[in-house]
Image (cartoon, rainbow, N blue to C red; front, top):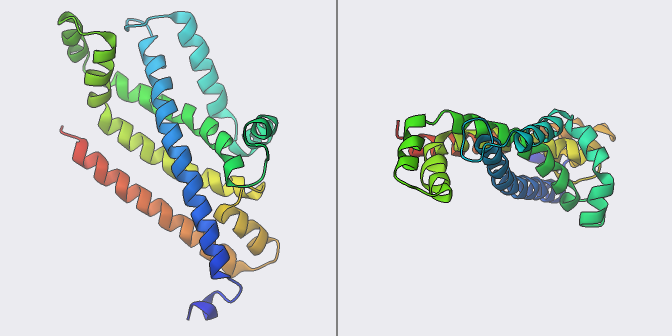
Length: 222
C-alpha cells in the first residue's frame, strides 16, 4: 500500500532524514533553551529598576538580540558559513546547521523569556529582596520558577520554528527532511517524496505541540 502511494520513496533514506531532522531539532532546542534563558535574564536584570540595572549592557544586548532575531534564517545560514567552517569544519551535514539554528533561535526565545519574566508580580521579587535573598537565589528560586509556564510555552513555539528552520537548512545541504524533499523530491520531480517528507515534518510539529501543551498545563499552577 505504501509503495503504491509513494513509489519513489526509499524508506531507509526517509528514515535517515527523519533522524537527522530530530537530531538537529533536539540539539538546537536544548542549546536555545540554555542560551535563550541566559540572554532573557540579562535583558530583564539589566533593565531599569532591576537588580543589575545597566543601561549600556541592556542596550547592547537588546540590539544584538534584535539584529539576529530579524535576519531571515536562510540569509543567516549564508552569513555564518565562515563561522560554521571554523567551528564544525564543514558547511554540509546536520552538525553544520547547528550554529545557525542556535544563533537564529536563541534571540527569538530570549525575548519570550524576557516577556515571561516581566509578567512576574513585582511584589514577589520585592519580598525576596527584603528578606535579604541573594541575586542567585532570586533568579533560581523566584524568577525562573515563577516564569516557568511562560518559558515552557515559549520553548514549544521556538522548537516548532526550529523544525521549519531545519527544513530551510536542508536546502543548503544540512541534511534532514528538508534536504531530502528538495533533492529527491523537488529537483527530480518526485512529488510523493516531497509529500511524505512534509507529512513527517507535520507529525514532528504536532508531537512537539502536544508535549509542550501537556508540560505547560502541568506546571501552570494559576
